[in-house]
Amino acid sequence: MKTTARAAITTVLATAVAGALLTATPAASAASAAGGHQGLQTTLDQAVTGAGLPGAMAEVHNGGSTWFGQAGAADLNTGRPLRPQDRFRIGSTTKTFVATVLLQLEAEHRLSLDDSVEQWLPGLVDGNGYDGSKITVRQLLNHTSGIANFAVADQVSKDFQGQPFLQHRFDSFTPRQLVQLGISVKPQFAPGTGWQYSDTNYVLAGLVIEQATGHSLAREITDRFVKPLHLKSTYEPTADDTGIHGPHGRFYSKLGPFDAPTLPEYDVTELNPSWGYGSGDLISTVGDLSTFFQALLAGRLLPPAQTAEMFTMQDPGGAWIPQSHYGLGVASLTLSCGRVWGMGGAIDGSWSYTFGTRDGRHLLSTEVNGDWADGEQWGPVSVFTKELEAEFCGNTTA
Image (cartoon, rainbow, N blue to C red; front, side, top):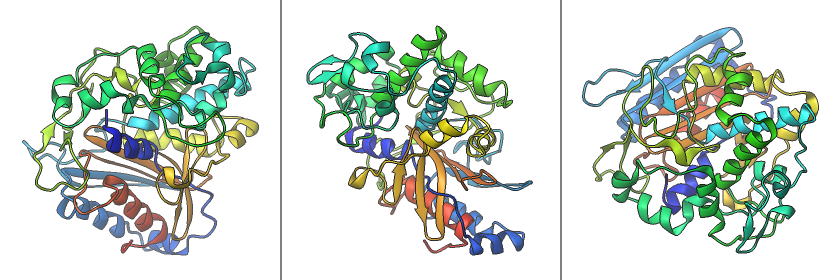
């Protein structure tokens, strides 16, 4: 869990970057024709040697070809390299899975995105300036609900900011407790009149899914995506499952600003994921994320009407990552040569992005096992933007 500033950018990132179809990318095409991803490999190397990250990896899918590159170490104690099968916490990319479930439920006529929160979760969002009858499911998904992010609640800021995180990272929360933390902070705007990234929105979205289906959120994600797409390394951990199953490295945090080269590094691989319910707790790999987003961007997971809803973008103004817009659990990022679509996620020790062309044919999935980047204003977000510029635009100087 991040502190206010970290939460904002995590949020920011937690999502990350996407955009419109890359209609013209001559530089990227030339790079691919040359048979190389040297520019991308250079950015990975610089993430370690320049930005001071422990390790960085990326997997590219372009048509029928796949490329994997890495730099640094998955484990600073052993020095072993990152591998394609390494699992990691995907943070807010969880939101894309949740939004896709809700849009599938709408297509199945089991709910409407214009239903109120009160209709599905009676009495849960009420008081302190909130009225769940005036907030829709759609507003949860596109962050226009006005519901505050539970990450900025006083208790969370006190217990999870800086050094206290080390003592509280195994604390457990129920989804309803997270909602109560969120609404303990007064809304900044009335529903539908502003934009504010809020993990609380997706906690509520997960609870709506459980009410509409009678199943756990984990079961719906497994039955709808993990099994049919053969995402063998993707799963939602239980609240008391503090580790990561299967192959994985170690994950490191400086518990401070993104650009803090003198701060010590802490191993934060183990933590209680319960505060990420619906908004940031899934575990996956670069390969599984590529498979999921290829299917989503190619229109294989949603009918055309729901696809159009998902990719209807909101302009966050100055409230989010520059050059980015946000849809329903997906984001868009404008690069120097066009726009890419996808999502990113941040959690203590692990930041990741998965973005590609609107048809899903050209896709990059990347992860770093540290939550800082020396000399970079936006931390790992700046590193990821350089990777995207290198891969899609052939630009290694961004």
